[in-house]
Image (cartoon, rainbow, N blue to C red; front, side):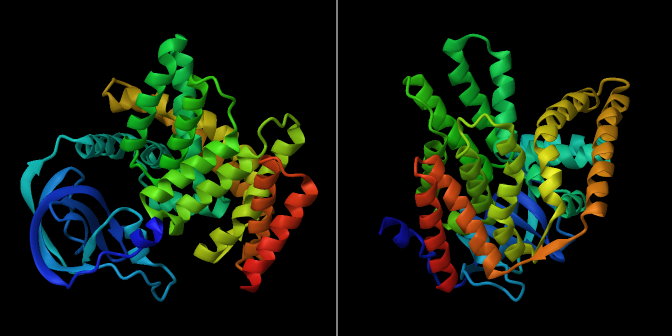
Length: 399
């Protein structure tokens, strides 16, 4: 009942508004640009002309008609209202005007903008796109298109892979056990906030933090339980996240992988990309029209490879970002590694050029596969897990 009441968007009459706030997000949007403004009335989405360029952390005065969100899909199936409600926005100014107030906030948005400027100016193309994604949660359109064709778009979304890398590095650098959990937790959350606090990164952070709490109390870790707790906490905090594709893909992948806890057979982990592909293909194809078959093979290599490549590239980028003479040459070493990966991934796509379009059957199969392995990870017998997941999936497909 509590969640249903919070799913009702705030209703108010459209009104002209003039307010000042801090830009906390800025991006291109169709033919124009959009900013997410932290203002006295709340978080506001402001659509602007392409020529209106503002930076994160900048103080901006905006004017326009503030409309409430009315969640409903557009002609292309995209629901802008739900998208922004999942990010905590209150309302939208569709044809706004804005001007800089001449101030820059010294909060986290300002530091994000400083790092973004250095990466854009000093990094070669592939390094630039991957570092913007891993450090700030930004997406380079050209790089995102390439990863989409490879079936590896998850590499560009700050999620469990990235947060896990940060935690593992912290554990390696902090040998003293007494301080390890506390310091790792602090820097993990700083990274999540700095990288944009996406729903997938928040899920990963809450999952790891739940595991830390259990470890601190001396209780055994149950991966399925920690993922479930993290997902429920996010839904209670912001119910609109349930319709966010990133949250659903992140939760599905994490639940399927966590169901393998304690499994040591290498065959299972080789099959994991296939299981993840089947589990998420319905959601991906529904959103983008189709899903590449090549992703099944590519992800066998992509996940462990990028687990090494992203921290390695970050290390190689530091000299250039810090202005060390000759640092650009070091950065190009990372660029060559990313280009070698590009050649490999393009080769797999050439060998496996097929795509699977969306269908209700594909979506039902994905639901059944994910639910089956989650139930198995929760302790169900195989027969019970298969039967229960099959019945539930069939019910939703018929419904």
